[in-house]
Image (cartoon, rainbow, N blue to C red):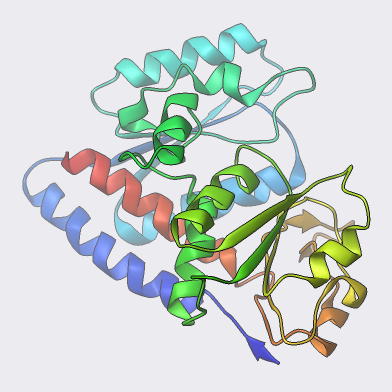
Length: 276
């Protein structure tokens, strides 16, 4: 079984982004990212820390706006204010959001030109119709990781477990754009294991630790684990049981797989936004 790490790719992406960021600073422009968080979720906290660290490595300023406990209207107002701030070039709304709050309702307040994580419904619509937009960084990172490890997609059967607007749905469209035949699975999919076993490329983004076991994986399949679940001891684990390695042909690790590529791509988006 072949491991598909992302750290080497992330380092390569950061090197290019860092050089471009330095050019902008020399021209008097400081690329700046604002991350708005409205949830005390542990996995979200891990992601925020990783973003701040990634920003520091490439010379991007990163401001975290803590709105935990705030009403949805207050969050939307802050997003709109940041969109109007000419000194801010990228805006990310961290998920999950408080119960009863929909991402689409709040992300619509983000200027699409600064929507570096592809959350605004306008951005998603442009992606799904093949128009230029910043793709959600995690979905884009899956494609980048597969390309880096030379995993072919054209004509292959891909199964995505998870239908969120953050990963599953946009990723399905990115895979379709690469000529894969795509099935999306979710909590009401019947015979989940049987559907997953048909995949040549299986991407798991359900947010449930250990959801996918060896019984879900066809022999020799490529498995990409997007899950970020924090255990009681503070360990970060994915959605895929490590025992999958017994049958898979290739597997991305957690941590060290999709995660570092996601943050590296997000920083590239911020610098691209600042340069535009």
